[in-house]
Length: 250
Image 1 (tube, rainbow, N blue to C red):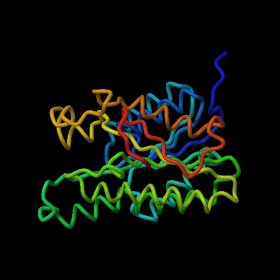
Image 2 (cartoon, one colour; image 1 turned 120 degrees about the vertical axis):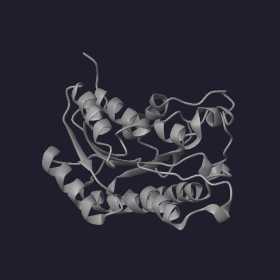
Image 3 (cartoon, helix red, strand yellow; image 1 turned 135 degrees about the horizontal axis):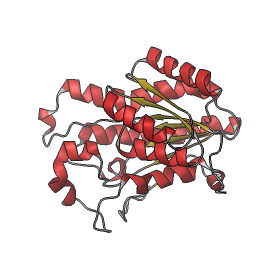
Image 4 (tube, rainbow, N blue to C red; image 1 turned 90 degrees about the vertical axis):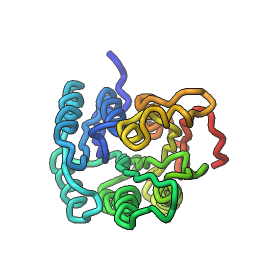
């Protein structure tokens, strides 16, 4: 019988209806974890994700809404604890981006949406989850290589990803006395529905890292699994860089 690395663990993931979040959810489910996930008005994708999670023989709960709403965050946490009994691992993965090659063309509405989705919502949800975490629990945040390298078309997005790095490092210090580890993953170019929608496949191929191809979402999910298990017991306040060989010095 396979030794499941996350047997009986309860995981809450944001942005898991597609892309990296979905791959994390499916990988964790295959390792024995029950999965609660948040999606933002993508019912069809969410239902498919839930079906695939349940096929692994674990329990699954989905929540539709905006993590920028603190009341919704409380609803998600209460629903997860009610359904599973506890939360062991929080994966903050939800995010959005609105590219612009000229700062004067950035719309204020989109700047605020980007910050609300990528960092403010992350903090609000973590705030609600934190009292439920205990010794051995883990928080893993999704940042990006652009937090270190920048991106000429993603000014506000890059800023939020830099904020996630700082938030991760600071929360790791605060969480240390409780025995909770806090880390992040900073992917490089990844083939996801969001990047394809934003830039198209052609644009992605022009910005490939030294390994000369974009990562798959499944390859990125493996870093999250490592950080969620005892294999990374000595790692906190750190960022993993599955970026195909980009040098980020961070």
